[in-house]
Length: 233
Ligand SMILES: [Zn+2]
Ligand SMILES: [Zn+2]
Image 1 (cartoon, rainbow, N blue to C red):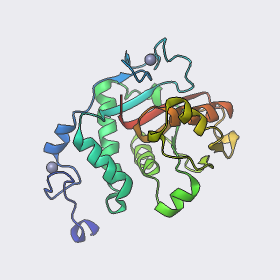
Image 2: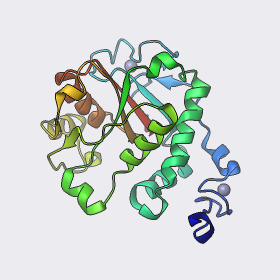
Image 3: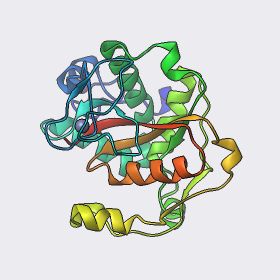
Image 4: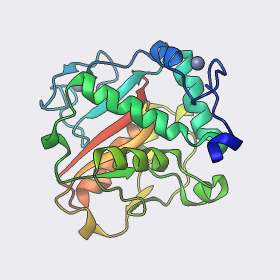
């Protein structure tokens, strides 16, 4: 019914029928591979292998699954921007979750053992920011992925309790410092010994996910992996 009243249009070419038509989806070039966490010359990772190379092995995050390159595709940036700031097309979460699943299939990571005993946790927005914006796009994405992967999502366990200036404007060292004590886990029992997949829209420097992983691991999580629609490097 809602579809009849508010038909969906491709957010790129405006063709009626969906938020991203098949032709425009092909422009996105969904990746067949995953890479380690290094921001310079990341190493290709095979499915089921450790998610890090020797250079990034000290990171708390175990590895990252990401479907799209961010820099070279204007369309990716345009869609993610709409996803973040235009609540009228929140259904882009469905488009992006389908893109991620297509990536898992292409990369060979759609295996049951990868997702066994796992939970999804969206990277939170700062509490007041989320209230004023009304939604967290990463939470919407985690909810859609949860339906397809049939693994639970915990949205209220990891909170961002400190306001931080935009990461883009800061040096790498400053970013890390900036995020100290920014996140808090509500109930450690719920994440103890779990394999956690942190869900976010874009993996830029990785500082945010790394700090979330740090807090979750300190609270007893067994492993913390990342899932991002796109990665910057
Ligand atoms: Zn289109
Ligand atoms: Zn690496």
